[in-house]
Image (cartoon, rainbow, N blue to C red):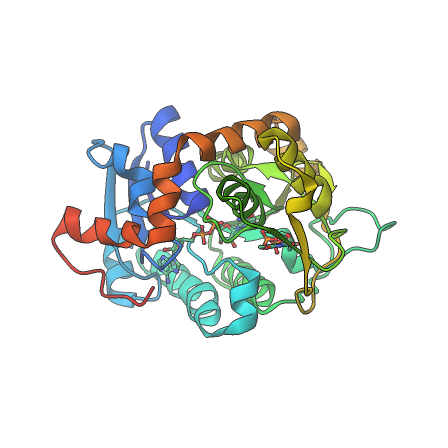
Length: 340
Ligand code: NAD
Ligand code: TYD
């Protein structure tokens, strides 16, 4: 099978490509724009793998996407603007990439007559926020996105559904809860707290720190995406989650404990506008139809993740210094040519 993975230089996409190259004989094309969140260094050890190639480009680039689509069977679409706080500052790139880019991919997949599956990777945030006593989100729940990020993801989900209904495109949508693990960009809660702890900086907690997320180790999510690709029912939506609800304060305390640091490093800061209170996923459909379940406990996952950031200072120090942006020029002899 020949697969187009979009956004493969990001956190989840890079972990997914690593999983594929380790466990399957598929030919992978990684299309990534190398925005600030894309880091070629996350896959530097796989550059010469015979089943892997990198193409720098945007998913909204119709000509490029049309050409690539003629060369593949299936698509796994990770490419997105993914950070809620950035979407609050400026939503425009979220609309361009998440909404328009997804439609370009769907059109090109159809026109190229791809024989495989279109897996669209989405998020629990499309469902909105849960009250403390409400049951976990189900795939049949209505969408109530609250941030520009989640609204753009919900829009892309609906475009995928429409492509399935109107054109019979073999689309499978996955919605996952908060991921953590190696190669996550240090703007997200867990890597930010680990790095701030290691650097002796304060740990900024939004609001009262009692917001709840359902944490899943990134490899469990990647295994879910692979199961969706190989076994997903066309037109289906599958929820993935870690069945692991924790308040932000609980997560931060675990990190401080592993690092042997004091809670005095915590600093409560102004809350995020429209901050969703709680997410939780009902994953029974994926468990039943895909024979999938999360395998990594939070205790093991967070230990491994903290250890990874301790052992891979080089990776994140080059992000913080901005040097990671030079890697493309060094490898390919061309300028990045995009705004960070
Ligand atoms: P990320 O921000 O780490 O990576 C996104 C990648 O997409 C980057 O490599 C970036 O360069 C690339 N990209 C951005 N715009 C592009 C464009 N126009 N064309 C081509 N490439 C582009 O994101 P992530 O955390 O790896 O998330 C991947 C996907 O999973 C996203 O669709 C996100 O909505 C979804 N998701 C993430 C989480 C999470 O906890 N991180 C949870 C559920 C779902
Ligand atoms: P984040 O990693 O941005 O993921 P999302 O908003 O998509 O769930 O944030 C996770 C939770 O952590 C969320 O409730 C916001 C909170 N948070 C902080 O308290 N401080 C921070 O510096 C960040 C980045 C997030």
